[in-house]
Image (cartoon, rainbow, N blue to C red; front, side, top):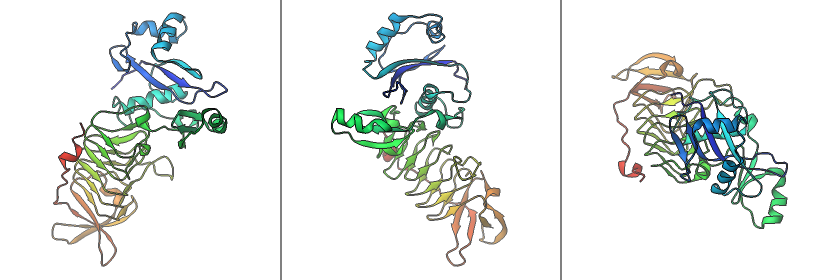
Length: 329
């Protein structure tokens, strides 16, 4: 889906050097429709805003009105920013706008160019009083009294900026802005969802969804399980989990799974793992690398408790989520 060009209007908190620490968007719109308008502000035509962004129309009155409506405070700056096309991330304003598009469920994971995002995002102390420059936290405390630092990171918690409808998140610090959570998703205390990753339907998340990983509807990630990411470690294969799958507690996944697959608790399956393939009569038919089984449906991965070998057999079980747990209204 091509939603560009689009314009975002929001507020950036600045450090003492007038450098941007974050951008909180209140308005996001395309030429055709509004994506976000937290204050229900009546806006001029898209072309008028484009002229302001391009500095061909210096409308100070509109900027002043927006600053008042958005309650601009000292140490903050009004942001009116346009993305013309999807390209490498050029600055913090573009980075936050793209992260918003993911968490607002406008764009699915891996559909936006996020190259350079780590370069343009500053490391920030995320406090109970908003973002603070890491080098200025002591001075900030001396002026503002008791300040709690919840994390020091380039990405804020998603729920501090976007709360998508129909989700439940037990520990908000474990879901980064830029996570994509579909309605019906429940993220329990041990669950973690990185940016540019998430669920494509109702799902139970008690494990880790690494950057770039997507989970299909009605799938269950058991407590402490892990999905292999691509940000470091040399892995360049995008991991995905199909529909109606189960990753057992403390298991790990390093290949893309098809639909209706199960990985036994405690089993970490990497692409290079040697797997004994069994038929419906539990007869070994071949030994292959796990990567050759990528994206295949109806597979059950277990470890033989006698020989220690990893085995794969047809999955005859079905994974059914508890509907009551995922009706998050």
